[in-house]
Length: 139
Image 1: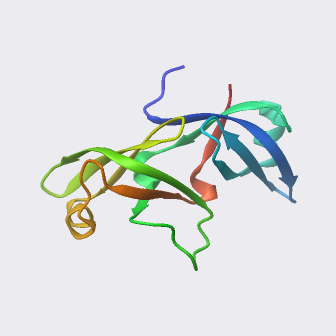
Image 2: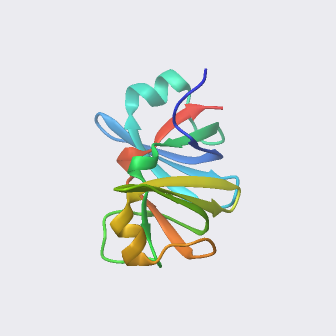
């Protein structure tokens, strides 16, 4: 199946914590980072997600925020460090490609944000992704 979601990072499930309707799934990405996805229990069951399962973490570029360093005092726990590899700026929006250990992420952000943060090739950034915005696919 082909998808329009370009952010697809492979990894291995390290834990599944079930709740009443949702579960949190912690995954160690192939680059070594750990992320958490909040998915329905139905999806966990249907996809056969369990500790040791190979998965792909899928994130739309519009759901990736960027910071110029690690951020504290937020509920966003998924913080993946990287380096800007390219910036494509339009009149209002921009796409920023970020090289991370084990792959690449693309963030769709405003042109103003690119200017304010002085994002350019070689800039160090941290990609911020809410756990509710990460989908998982069985690999």
